[in-house]
Length: 301
Image (cartoon, helix red, strand yellow):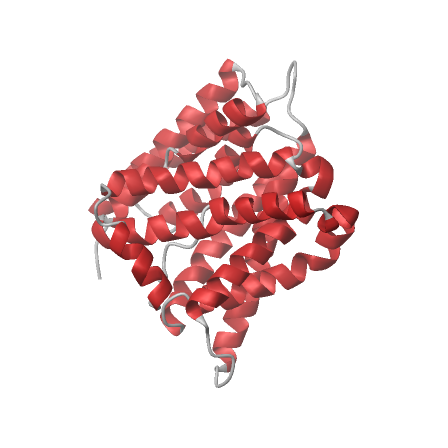
């Protein structure tokens, strides 16, 4: 799962981290963020037997909110009604996106789920475009998703595919809301508050699924590791990369995320994919990269 791309930390903690990152090449930062997120997802899936998918989301958002609140220390008083509504809406989108994605990878391979989920940001990228070229990227992505959802021998779990589709819609909402959140909050304050809201929202189901596993220090430690790999580490790397890279280049690099997800699933969990699924992932990666690169042709305000 991706983290927000539109806010940046401004407190001392992120600043200290940032001083160590400028020596790292920008593409390496993006690739590191992608690898961190996908390895985190694979490790999370390995714990689903103990915690359940939403139980792991509960742990992940708990760690993420604790880290972000400690780094940003947002003020809770004096906020406008618009800020409150945006934080609540973003928290709902964050909770729904993570819960549906983790529930999807509980049923289908990670690479497949990430590929379908990528339809969300791709839709945002080309929404409202009148360029014929963007229709090519949409057609490629649709062809890729079609390969994944087509029936046949060894067909994928339809509920898992549906959950991945819901996660895609939630990711699109997440992107649109994060843009608005970045306009009304300084730094990562809005993200920190929204992550805390998401944590509270998933708590009832998460605690019910995880049950007694929450009393096992090994599960808690693993959940903390997943939270760091899936949120704190990639967030820091992406923020530094975005300071140096044009948005379109960042988008092109991010387009390999479905492939990295498939690789993480294979290495960590032994999730081998069929040739049709590999072809589908390749189509969506090309579509996402094309849409991001072609964005340079769009008129600017």
